[in-house]
Length: 569
Image (cartoon, rainbow, N blue to C red; front, top):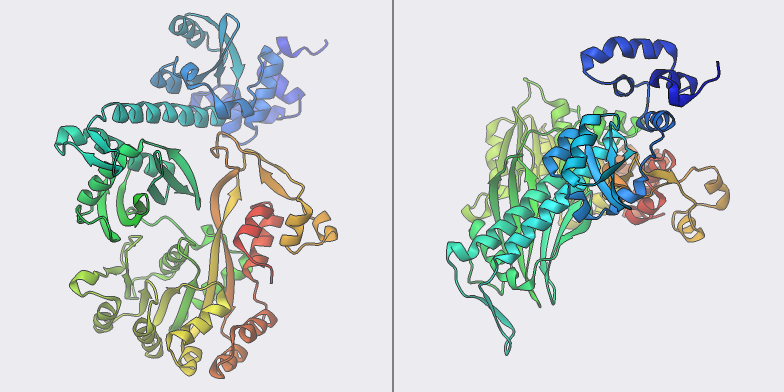
């Protein structure tokens, strides 16, 4: 009998197309009752089938078109909002577009006649179903209904904003009323800005005045993205409320101010570090969001190559010495150090940290937060730590000669010291210590390991595709056409999963400089960073650029990220 997919069962189609075998279908038929899922979803849950393969089979069986993912990036929100959000989430459906006398909708299960009938009643038009994968549908619903919610809430806040007066002569904006009623729209807007930032996984919020409006941006995966532009008339009110929340001087608009806000949202507890600085157009606010929840990173999840991981694990288990992690702000230094502490933590060791601020909470570790205003500086905190019988000490950052001197003394008296320093690479970190004022013989005697690191963005796994770099990109990356011919370059095209960026998440690149006898001798002699680099390379050090290149060759990141984050030596 000839095979016709339109009259075949789904399991038969999947086997016929070679997506699964008979045994896998039989196993799924047994387990689908326990899972409460259909046969296709069960095979996906068991790891035998992909969503794309299921869609292909359903397309053959039912004849419905598969949704083009490029269309999902820019849906008409007025069409999407025709289906209420709770209904869309519960029944796994989203409205895509109007077509003739009907509405095209994307469903994860187009055979659910009950949903199709109720959609016809809700929309009052013919329903034209298209097929969509569950994961893509979930992210599409989340993205577009979030936009609808945000737009509505911003419009509500801005719509109730009627208490700003503009003095055209001096172009000054004054708040006509400071009552709680008048502040309500701005409070609502600020709540929305912070809540959406937390949901987006942002590390920073930037609120800055432009000529005609205020620009709000979030830093997600290390890159800033614009999320909204409220009218400029709201800007002084936003700044004032941020100052009130962070206990800063509302009247002072000419000088920079720093403060912090402790927030407890429905999602998590967050410590917000606030920095306000005056600009020519008004004051700009940057808020750093620090998650006060439990530290969830491990050394194995940071992105180490196995060889580097082995070196790092070996050195962090030494009884004494200094381990320095260097890099710019936001390069993951604190994350690496806290993951190291978590790795070596045991009941027999007394671990104490001195930080400004405490970014991560670690159970079973004594953490001290410095408070300059009451005299609790790094220096005074560290001197008291010495009387607390520590085995391992983490110093948040070496900022000056005093802190560096204490760190050296800790290591020379039998303690293991972890710390950070701002420097461009590992060899420069060593010379930076000497620039601060530490004698070369003390640096050479105490230093065990210097690790420079950066974070590179990972290609989105959902929209990754092959990429042919330009000649300029190959040159910037230090590659010849012959070398490039052996590499399969990747690039994310942008999709609903990654908010059209082409990237999803970040991973570390590392440069580990182990202080061996040759490097120690160069330090003793006051050698410069070029001599130290040459000795480290002879000993097998992989540079930041080499580390990034390895990630690119393995398809983890892109050539553009390598060029952006590293320098070819």
